[in-house]
Amino acid sequence: MPAAQDVTHPFEPVFDEQSQVLVLGTMPSPRSRKEGFYYAHPRNRFWRVIAQLFDEPLARTNEERIDQLLRHHIALWDVLASCRIAGAKDASIRDAVPNDLARIMDAAPVAAVFCTGTAAAQAYRRFSEPKTGIACVQLPSTSPANAAMGLDALVDAYRPLAAAAAASEAPLLDVPDVVRLEQAIANAGTPLSTLMDRAGAWIAHRAIARIEALRDDAKEPTETNKTSETTGTNETNDRSCPHPSDEPRAGHDGARRRACDASKIVVLCGNGNNGGDGWVAARILADAGLPVSVICAKEPHDLRAQPARNAAIEALTALEEHGARVLVSPDPAALESELESAAVIIDAILGTGFSGGSVAAPFDAWIEAAVRARNAGAFIIAADVPSGLSAQTGRAVRPCIKADETVTMLAMKPGLSTPFAFAWAGTVRIGAIAYVEPLLERMACEDNAPATGKDGKPDFAGSRGKKTPGKPLHAKAGDEDRAGAADDQADHAEESRRRDIGAEEPRRSRTRTEQTANPSAVCSALRQDPFARAEQEDDDGYDPYSDRPPMPEPVFQRDPWA
Ligand SMILES: NC(=O)C1=CN([C@@H]2O[C@H](COP(=O)(O)OP(=O)(O)OC[C@H]3O[C@@H](n4cnc5c(N)ncnc54)[C@H](O)[C@@H]3O)[C@@H](O)[C@H]2O)[C@@H](O)CC1
Ligand SMILES: [K+]
Image (cartoon, rainbow, N blue to C red; front, side):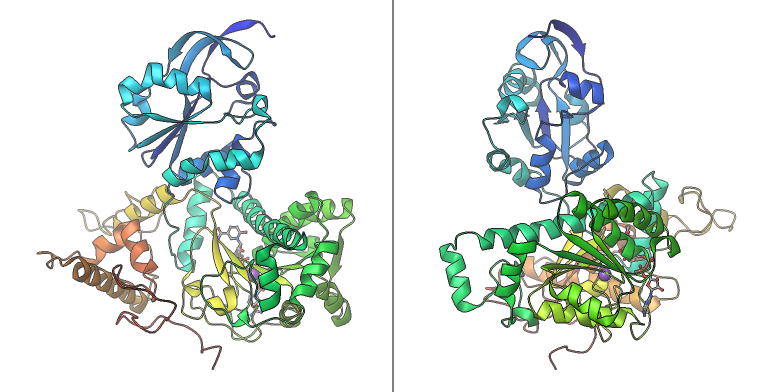
């Protein structure tokens, strides 16, 4: 038993004014104090529980951990400010002095408190609850000392935390605004290379989830699996709406059997930063011990896009160490044979940088081969946007990837929200690679800054040193129609909301500037999806045409079923 020592809490709480839930331990362990962050012992499962709880990649750095908590509106601190303790033994705590939780409670709308263990809950009840007036929920400890409790059981026990910690919906942003947001993130200290690492981690996370689902399917058939095999439907797909691929795909079960043998993942990497996401994913998958291969058009050293070039060079070294195959400009036969044995294909060919009315060689042939492999049972995960689909307009050229799942980074894109987008994108998930809410608010404030000062000259005061006057968050310069459509959509949303709740028209309607100035208003206006229904309406199924609001038609491509 280590000797008792006097310990003072050595680091700051994690919280902001959006925090709704507070998680408290007793006092950081010696290992956490050494590492300078909460739950830092490699065998402490706190961060793994949080990742699994929200179905996200494991946060690897303290910055990612803070981001992850804040995105989910979780504050993190400990009950004690100082105490005498032997090692990490909570039972040995003496002379406890509590932290002043008012620091968080006065700044944030915290409505629920969770304590990570018995001692933390006891200390909270004794010192803090009389002041906060909030009873705590006691959770099991994630420390190695509680090894009797497995990870799955811990995750289950922590579910009330996930339920209380509702994250805000991801915004819908025009592609130029996504670029602007990326720049704001970089200015705030997270470089694009880090964002690319996180994007790759999200894609790898989803690929691993798919491989695990295939492995589960391959185990003893359950009643559900038996039903699935008789009907030929894809039970593991969580798409909530019909998909052209829902017709039985030849060889689908074959793909499952093949995956049991190999779990093979093929990553198709284009020459831009979308390809960079693919290289990072390939590296992570290879490091995780999965059989992965990369198909690319250029040697990493010949790439020009940054940070894709550096990411590809780093990935290549790792892939070579793992003995993974890297095929540079393969001939059609080699391309076909690599793809036809894949259980999962990652499409990182083209992302938001795709332009033009067709896909140039060799990527057109890659897309066609990938779609053939999908028809034979492979599962395609698109990075950011399916290659061949415009992230802005939703127009799909021929050929276009048909993904089962798309992991789109940072924000929803208009091209993924059109009525036919799911034909190409499948299930769309947001790769939450940064905590963007405060940045969106700041961007909206900049946009709201007056364009001219008192002297009639441009006023740059609100634009954080940027030498361009702010522009509305979602309106592109010279794109009055789109801005007008967004405003009309917002007006329509407001009108139908009033109709639904029987409210009278407000005396003074909000101006367009006000609407575009508030990120949540802007985002919710643009988030109005064309399938939205009145809440009280009895929704008996999917029918995109039954009640589409009379709003300007979104831009979308030809009906793919016509
Ligand atoms: N939004 C974000 O925050 C982040 C974005 N990242 C990734 O970066 C991507 C954007 O990267 P880039 O701007 O480099 O663009 P892309 O990589 O999407 O596309 C550019 C490449 O595609 C080629 N290309 C364009 N049109 C073509 C056509 N019709 N036929 C054939 N080739 C064509 C270009 O020559 C160029 O090589 C995003 O889609 C995303 O995947 C992430 O890495 C980092 C974070
Ligand atoms: K892609």
